[in-house]
Structure formats: structure tokens, C-alpha cells
Image (cartoon, rainbow, N blue to C red; front, side, top):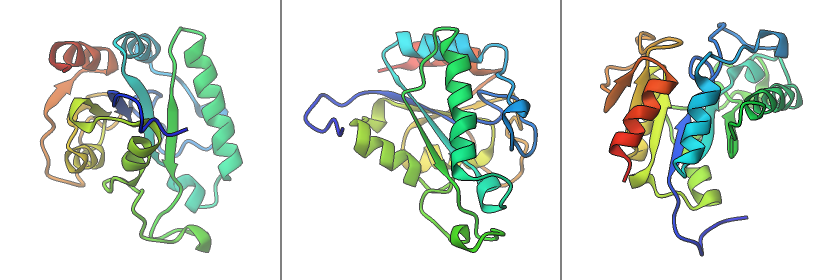
Length: 192
């Protein structure tokens, strides 16, 4: 339900792979899903600060035909459950299944949702009444940071996962942190 009649809320947008869970290259089964050591506690801390926690993730694994959207939903359900066991709540998950070079024709599009585009973020804004000027984006790749800059949120690059060394874009984050736990300390310091 859109929250347009309510006061705009703050959000922390999180990339998934390399931020919440261990980067494995192509995560295509729940057996590959390992939550990073400080991720659950960090997400629980974000919850306590009053931010929505929104996952925004590119998932070309669908476009490649390696898993289906229901299989991805099942992986996300396990991730949410594992985090919840440690008091961490994900408020929403948005993913882009597209890729311009997809193996599956129906996903072979240049879309607005694939980061560095901001379709996923703007969908969350519309559906949850998010104030971008009070929000943050945390990612491990330059594509995440570019998306955050385009959306005009404050960006935090974590050194887990790719740690910004993916080499796709020449972009500087607003902040850099060792991991998601250290990113939360930045949010506490700079939150509006």
C-alpha cells in the first residue's frame, strides 16, 4: 500500500551479494547463500534507527536462465528468514531480472531497473513513501554507487564483496566502510 499520505520515511538501500551475503560469483541456489558475519546485527541496528531496509539487486542469473523468478524468491525467503532469526528485518526486496545480453529472450532488454539505473529505487520510493534526501545506499560495486548518486542518496561503499574493484565506473562514494557494521556507524553519525 503506498504511503503517500504519511510522512516520508528514511530508507537504507542495500545491494545483496557482497553486502548482505558472501559474494560467490553466480548465486543460483540456497546452498550457496551465506550471510556475512556482521550483516544481521547491522540490519537490526538499521531497523532500530527507524530506517526502512530495502534490498535493490541486479539478478542477471534469471536472464541467463540459471534460475527462475520463483527460485529467486525462494532464495530471498531463506535470506529473510535467516536474518530474522537474529532480529533483522528486510522491509522490501526489489530485483532486476533483465540483461541486454540475456540468454532468455523475454529478459533481453535495456531496462530502467537494472543498476546503475534507478528504477528499483524509484519503485521503492513510490511504494513506501521514501524521502531520498534522508536515505542511504550501501553497495560493494561501482554500479551501486552510480545508482545511489543518480538517486541523490548518500552512498557508502563497503569493502566486502567486490569492494569497489569491479572497474565498471570511475565514481567516488560519499563514504567507505570496512563492512555493513561499519556502514551503520556512518549512518548513525550522518543521519538527518
